[in-house]
Length: 486
Ligand SMILES: Cc1cc2nc3c(=O)[nH]c(=O)nc-3n(C[C@H](O)[C@H](O)[C@H](O)COP(=O)(O)O)c2cc1C
Ligand code: SF4
Image 1 (cartoon, rainbow, N blue to C red):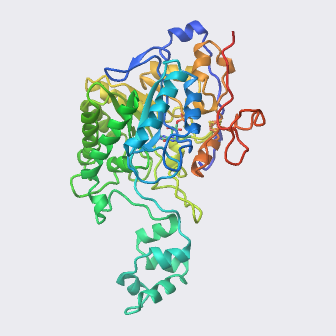
Image 2 (cartoon, rainbow, N blue to C red; image 1 turned 30 degrees about the horizontal axis):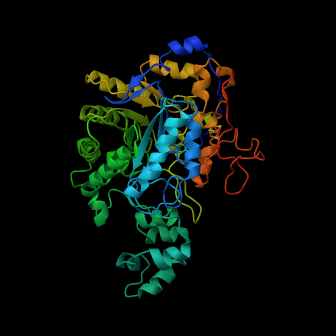
Image 3 (tube, protein in one colour; image 1 turned 60 degrees about the horizontal axis):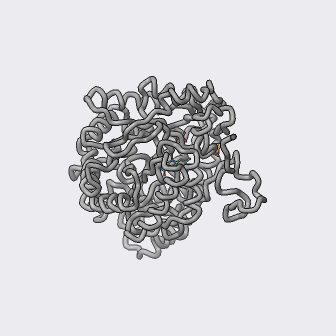
């Protein structure tokens, strides 16, 4: 991941620990509605986190059930299930919802969360579309197979009239500097990072037709989510994926879906309306989007406040913010690996690590989220807003609520470090919370597409009977259990 020049090492701390009575009176542990039909008992929220545990066919596995059961035992207000693909296309061990055959497994997942939390936790699902991305190619393969040879290449290497094979062979012998001149900017990037489709590739029919195809695909996924019994849906409009790319200031499509911010939000609103029609007005439907893309030329706060107000005005039941997490500034992957959108500066903003700059890792998205929420309230709308990023203690969460940053507090990594942390605080046992150290070991596993675990507990009692381990047999897959003292 990107590092600041002179990193400062911060430290997590438990903050002021409330007594049980104080916790009971707090904002954090007070109810909030997300839509007409769904009330959360408390304002604690576990944002989506991909754990790499679905089957290769994208189905809910026992490991997926174990992962979410463990979070549900901490009884947060809501858990958002990881980014789940809306298309019925192979995508490795990531959950999918692109066909009715996924519904029974997802129903089991909802039941597991409701049962494990004794009905205290709402289960939402994040639904996502993403475009094709290839691994960084081996140079030979790139020149022999992937690169489409054009007269532009022949001109660049002074080889007019050469047969294709000869051009390929010649390109493969060039130095990096010579190649950079011979290839187009896009081909150079494909060679360096692996080919990646963009929403602006209007020469590709399936990209050109995204605005015609996506509303129906999202709507069908939404219908399935409701059939599976989820309490609500979060449309994934954040980070590096299709819908965020439509919102992005870098989207210059010339078909009415790019350029001005009014055009860039058009498809996200059309998708929302299509899903709304499929799930009905009485069903919780919101989205996650970026306050800032944190890349050169990317979306900034004024666009995000506009998007937030428009989403709220359209009728979304909640809005969850994030920041950064883009492919545009990601680090070059190794040959054979895929580019990962959390390795550049925008990734640092998205999953802030403990080694940070002057702003620090805790509450990096708070000010921007407060602005978005302020604009929504100024427009006379009461849509609840969720903010995450470095939250790890009660004091910080409570302050975010009392300062008007948000209405619901999200905590991803702290909840992974200690899935019971809300419950412990609610019971006045805050001193027993295992604090996340924000070293991003979990994010490193995600990057390598390995089962995500936390370094604070994954080597604990690995030899005990009944403890499920990762594929290599070294790490436990879920946090050790915790029982409320008598
Ligand atoms: C392992 C891992 C997987 C993640 N997967 C997703 C995801 O599927 N969808 C999403 O919107 N954010 C995802 N995130 C980002 C988190 O939801 C959250 O925004 C980020 O970690 C910052 O919040 P935190 O400081 O509370 O961890 C993931 C984060 C981690 C660590
Ligand atoms: S591995 Fe655990 S302690 Fe480290 S950042 Fe992830 S959740 Fe926090």
